[in-house]
Image (cartoon, protein in one colour):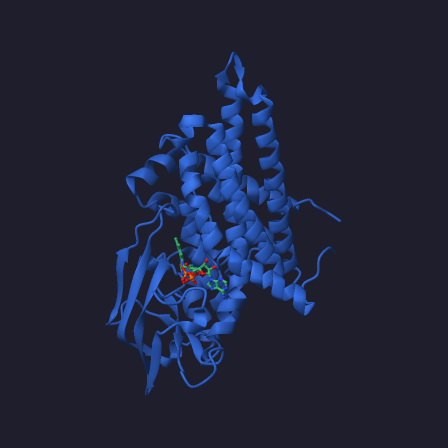
Length: 387
Ligand SMILES: Cc1cc2nc3c(=O)[nH]c(=O)nc-3n(C[C@H](O)[C@H](O)[C@H](O)COP(=O)(O)OP(=O)(O)OC[C@H]3O[C@@H](n4cnc5c(N)ncnc54)[C@H](O)[C@@H]3O)c2cc1C
C-alpha cells in the first residue's frame, strides 16, 4: 500500500500552494468583506489551466487525475473557498460534456471551456426541488427542431458567467422520471433566458449564486447533452460523484485552514504568563482537529484514487464528503473557540471559515442524503469496506 502522492502530484501541489500564498491569501479577507468579485485571481487560474482540469488533453485541457483534482480544491479552499467555487461547477459541467457530449458538442465547447474563454456551471436545483431532482418542473416541449423551455432554477453558482449553462429539464412527463429528463446546453443569449438576483448567502462569497428563469426559451434540439433525449438524470448523477470529491476536498482545505490558524494563534497568544498552546485543554483540541483532518484527507484521497481506478465511487465519495464536511464544521468552531474573542472578529480568518463550512454539508446533496447513499451501497452489497 502506498500513501504517497506521485512526484507529479507533489509538484502540482507545490505550484498550487505557491499560487494560494501569493495571489489569494493576501486579499481574501479584504475582498470577501468588500463583496469584490475575484477577477484577477480568476485570470491567473485561467493562465494556470485550472479551468481545464476535467477537460481531456485532446481538447486543450489538463485531463487531471482525480487525486490531482482533489488537490486543487483542497489547496484553493485553504485560501478562499469562494474562489474554489468558480471552478467547481465549471469542472463538473466540463466533465459531463467530455463524458456524455456528442463529438460536435465536445469540439464546439471544450477547447474554450478549458482555457476559461468560456465558463460554465450546472443548473439542477429549483425552488421546489433540490434533493428530489425527479420533482423538477422545468419543462422542455418539442416544437420542430427546438424545445420550448420554461421553468425556474435557483441556487445556481456561476450562473452569470455560464455559457453554455447545462440545465436539467423534463423532456417528457409520461415517461418514468429517470427516462423523462434531459440536460440541455443552454445558450444564455437566447430570448427568454435571464439570470436574476444574486442570492444573499451566509458565506461562499466571491462567487455568485443566482436564480435563473427560462421563459419559453427556444433551445435547438442539438443542445441535448449527448444528442439523445431522456438520459439527463443518469448524466447528472454520474457527475455528482466527482462533485462530491470536489466538496470533500474543499472541506479538507477549510478544516486545514482553521487548524493552521488555531495552531499559530495558540503558539503566539499568552495567558497566565504562557502561550495558550501550553494548556492541556488547548492541546487536546489541536490533537482532535489534526487527527480528524488527516482522516478526512485520507478518505478524500482514497475516494479520488478509487475513481482513478475506474470504479463507480458513490459510496466512497459520499463517505468522504459526509465526513470531511462534518470535520470542517467542527474545525472552524473549535478554531474559533481557541481564538477566544478574536475568532469572532472579521479581521481574522476564522469567522469566514465558520461561515463557509456549512455549505459543504449541504451542497452536492445534504449529508443526510450522503448517509442514505452510503447505506444503500452497503445494503445492496455493492459497497465494501476495507481493501
Ligand atoms: C451556496 C449554494 C450553492 C449552490 N449551488 C448550486 C448549483 O450551482 N447548482 C445547483 O443545481 N444547485 C446548487 N445548490 C443547491 C443545493 O445542491 C441544494 O440546496 C441541495 O441539493 C439541497 O436541496 P434543497 O435546498 O432543495 O433542500 P431539500 O431537498 O428541500 O432538503 C431539505 C431537508 O430535507 C432533507 N431531505 C430531503 N429529502 C430527504 C429524504 N428523502 N430523506 C431524508 N431527508 C431528506 C434534506 O437532507 C434536508 O435536510 C447550491 C446551494 C447552496 C446553498
